[in-house]
Image (cartoon, rainbow, N blue to C red; front, top):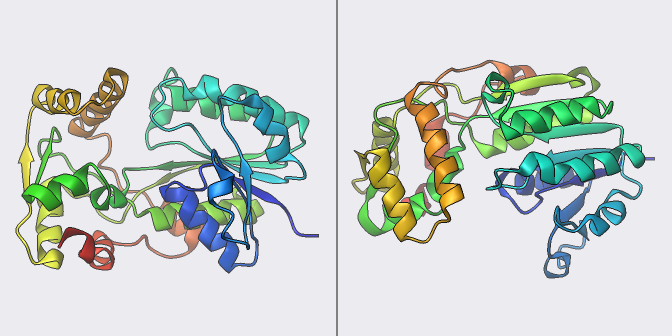
Length: 284
């Protein structure tokens, strides 16, 4: 009998790609979403209602499940606390593996919510794999960055000239599949990066080349960037979290390049040039 896999965040950037990989490998997952009735057109997938704010959705989602791809609630400064009852339910349900998506560098700060989440997963006694990706390449073809690029041909960000080893979400999803299906990764943590570190001047040049239009990176101060977000209606707690991330970027925390994608997948990560070419229509 095949193992049953539950994918939390099944409609997100990484979860959506992971669902595709599982289906293509004849391991159709149970896909968790807050609104399963809107997703039932895809008959090859079993959609199930799931909401961290509604613990009554936990037991049905976990019924008969062997492995869980866990994604903390995005944009929540208390995502570790939100996930605690679900981790307890996974223990009760006798889940045999948790593949936990967090973020690059969380191990440097034991008080950071995503590191606390990792420690809670570890304390559960369930075998785990932590996946710690750097910033997604696909952020450039999604709002709000895409909105600004299309409207003005610019990127205003408080990143100075810091470099990031951006990673393609398709590689993160492929790493998730490897972690879910290969026993050699049990109880390990992987920091997932691209093959090179780029600053946003490099990014703008690459996006300009594939789109055929001039795209310019404009470095701005943290204060100006946060004021713009506030004027657009972004909640202050999300602005504070976003600003903290960019402080880490400016300090160089997101510039290291690791070999962990090669270890997990047996191949180099997708390059930014390949990503840009694959998504070129987005910026035209």
